[in-house]
Image (cartoon, rainbow, N blue to C red; front, side, top):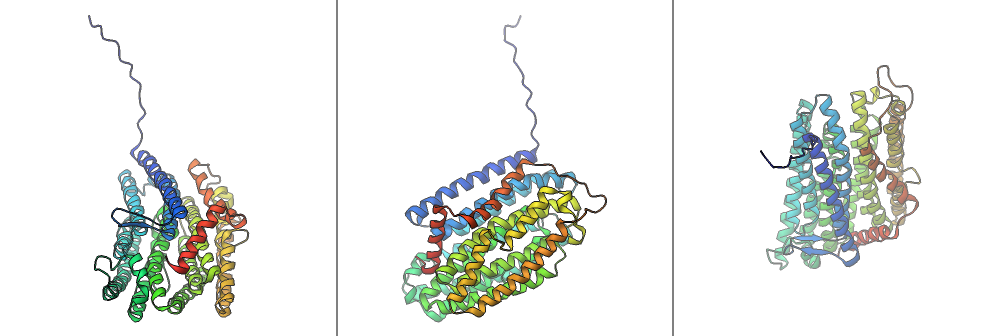
Length: 484
């Protein structure tokens, strides 16, 4: 007779692989945000951090980018779980694709982090190119003809652009070596900044022009922006949020690293005029295209072109007001634009289309999503009391302060056109009666709650800015004004 005690078996519910990977992705993204905030705190309180034999270098500008990557990444991860489950129910995504999505998604996040934590400009170039290759897989995720075409267009145009940036990096290296730097340090940003007055001004100006065209292609600056509306319209909405909310800033970050060196070597006139020109062209073209859009995600894509143009205008105008406005604008655009893409994803699922003519009565059919769409549209167009109102006001004021009132007038006209166009489109989608056959009502998913936080932050920063945040933004603006 056996004397062994009976074993109590407790049934453990099986967790679907897609749900498990979503939870794991949320934990990973939360950890990345915590570590990014800790690194940013160290930088803003004690100065730049250097590690791994000098390979890793994070200053105030890099710390700000790091926090934005982590914050938008967490938002997109939280949203992606419910988004992909809905796609699976509709038969558009398989369980295996669900798993693959999160693998590529977090690899995309890692490549962006790599771009802002290295000092060597050559390594920055490699990381930016890596973001293209990884995110192209996500742009073509649905494996449809349109999405594959958008992915190839994205790869080809951004690779051509990044080739121009590579030529600029080579010119910087050559100039650094000729100025006396060891070849192992000739692309280190701090080393180039230290000897910038000894660099050949003509060579460095050419390097910056090439870098701005190259990295500006990735940042969505006109007229090199043509990949962006196609990629945003075909990518899954969580990917569009990362592309617009973070990746464009990262590409501009790479160009600004070269701009700071060029400004020290040859003065602010050349770089300021070039940034101002690209910024105004981008702003004007985007405002006009916003008026005639028919696809919701393409509308949001052109809005991103507009806001990248505004940032370039602000930095080109310079001065304490312009640079502070540029930094605040980058931050608040990264907070607001992902929320709009999440709302677009929800509307696309309910209406089975992103064509704005088919989306009507969103506030009645989906009250939470419709409300987010209206609130996000008001915020992204710079309605007070949002922080984007403050940054846009600062950009206009910077133009008058710099003696370039004509630039402020152009900015005001473009903002008015974009404001009218975007809000007109949103009004037609959000208000009125929903089409016959559209389900009325919207369940509240707890994953949607964190998505309200960035929108609330964008409003809060327009009313009251915590001293720690204000000090951090001042440090970044000061760095853009003087480098080290």
